[in-house]
Amino acid sequence: MTGPTPHVDDTDGTDGPAPGGPRLKGAQMRIAMVGLGKMGANMTQRLIEHGHEVVAFDLSEPARSAAAAVGATTVASLEDLPAALTPPRVAWVMVPAGAPTNDTITTLGRLFASGDIVIDGGNSNYKDTAPLVGQLAARGVALLDAGTSGGIWGLHEGYCLMVGGTPEAVAVAEPVFTALAPDGGYAHVGPPGAGHFVKMVHNGIEYGLMQAYAEGFEVLSEADEFALDLHEIASIWRYGSVVRSWLLELAERALRPEAGFDRIEGVVVDSGEGRWTVEEAIDRGVSAPVISAALFARFASQKPDAFGLRLVSALRNQFGGHAVTTTDGTLGGETAVPR
Image 1: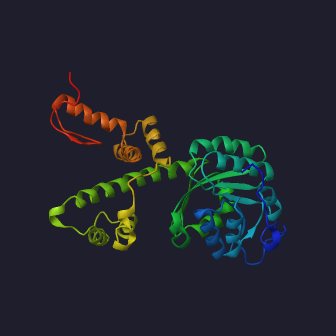
Image 2: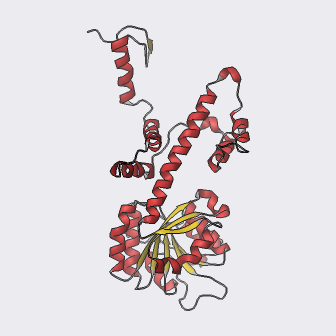
Image 3: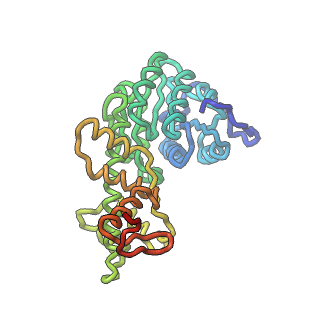
């Protein structure tokens, strides 16, 4: 976000900084939301619904206009944020993890003043937090890392928030955390970096849970002799079963006849957190076979014609004469390549 500022159309009156000065009567906090994708936009709306004032920024003008439509004040650049906020300024960064997040935090650290706070709410690697904390601390700016779970349901259900940072900075931003989270869904889990670390492991567990449901339902789907109704099974498991969960509720929704499950391809993206969790388990000597297997299953899903699986098939043919499937059909029980 340190590149050129996008073109701004001021004719609708939505862009431009709001005046500084005292917070408006009845508003609990005035906070900036940087990044108005699905999560950032919904969080903006939830904060406004809970009485907070939000100054919103995104590189996309349509995204800014959508935020303005739900009551946010929008600005056309990061450089406009300081004047639109009241000290101590608080900005929540909700942009893609990695360079976009790190660059945005660095820019805000340069623009903000001593006593101000930046919150990283994305799926950042916790190892990126410490260098940024030191960088911002040199200017007296605090960085909080808020592991955020809730997805597109967070607007109405609330977001589970796992926050890392100093107690002093967390206390300043706490009204925002309690507005975004449902009752009991927010905690200050530890010092800087702890929030992202806890969220990383949370997502690793999520990998394993989803894989277990996926494998179980696939076994059920292959039991043709019983003509099982998978949607019905997912539905009844939600009541009284020891495997009931919110993910199972979502599985029930996905398996509804009208949901279009048959049109979905079996490619599952590895977004990073499960990989980081497995790496941490290795580094710390922790056995994590379920999360590891779920991660490797995602790798396999992205390569339906993977070289390794093709080689396994060829080896079985070589040593045992097992049939192999080729692009021209199936070869029978002979070695495909003479010795």
